[in-house]
Length: 293
Image (cartoon, rainbow, N blue to C red):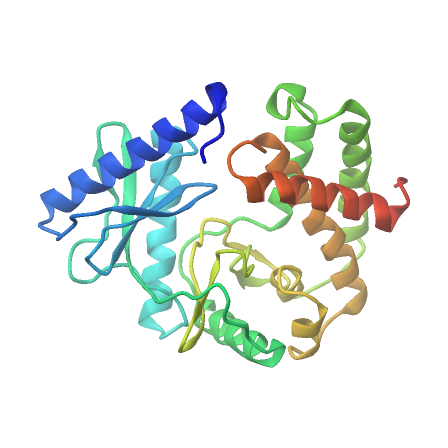
């Protein structure tokens, strides 16, 4: 059931707009799409142009100019990875992948992949898939931001209460101190940097297919240590991807929680899983740091 009130209405309007834009682009490209279906509505809205094996990623989070720039870069990354046989769901090849526009909305088109959320993968298999992804991403010719930019942006968000209006003030102050501490701690490490997925988690950015793990959503791609990607997959996976700097991984695990908590507190009403992550990562930081920093 959709939540009530203004926020529930906003969510319904956002999803309606995403389906309208995706359907309009499908008609323009002669894609068979009789019953478009929303697969995910978190940072952006993902629409399956059913029954065609095509997925539209609709930029519903940001203004058009920002969404267009991010989607263009993501397509460039997807095409590079696909050309090197990375384990990804690639941009469509049967029709131009985009970016396409419908009014003020922009979107890109990707190939549909089977996904069973109940399918489990062994840590060794996830580690091997991530290593293949990293190897394929190496040599990407485009520009990528440093992963620390996400940590710095978290500080900017936390310094403006209007961007996280429902975050209690004491929690905001706690996260601000954690953010400064994480940046200081990271400055003490010297690590080789490489192109990274940025957010390779199993809650939507890695599809659980019969053929194995398949990576999607490259908006957070960045340059940094491989340990940054491993923080999204857990310690068991990291143990199958040597060599690992365990001290760096520990700091990055806390840094990941800081970033996720900050982003999710910006819009906890977006989806139940967003609200859950907002509380979980804030609580994790307090548990690990004892409410201190």
